[in-house]
Image: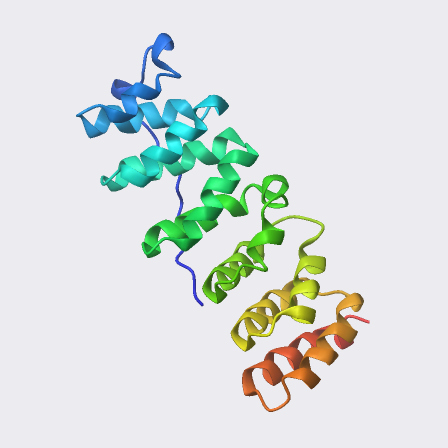
Length: 207
């Protein structure tokens, strides 16, 4: 499933900057003026206690620049609560929000580690595929381990195919046996055969 690259960070013109005593004022997220809401969201990235308010704003906001600022602020807080809230966005019907949340989560490797295990066994296949998308460029030592656990257990061919796409970039020799077992389990599935052989071929060339 292709993902749309999106940069959630939003710069705030100096004229919209908040005065110091407004920096953590979550009430401004409900201001009538979208420019004020955007500036408020930008400022709240330095206020971890504002995460619940930012998540509520993300659900309610309709202006795209403000939504981008809210997402960027959630990423800057660097909190596990923010990561959990962003992970919940993977269930959204809004494709922009799903993809933007993935982009932010990719920049939070330590926080993603607290939610990824649940996402990769979610009952919804689409959520599992999107979770694999988070791992695509996530800089975390456990990415390969998470993907190998997934292909050993997941019954869905599309989820496993997505995992193989990422493994093609990160696999080490540890992946050889799990990938071979996957090829056997999904014998007759053309894409699994193609992607699996690609992983094994790259491993052979890296010896």
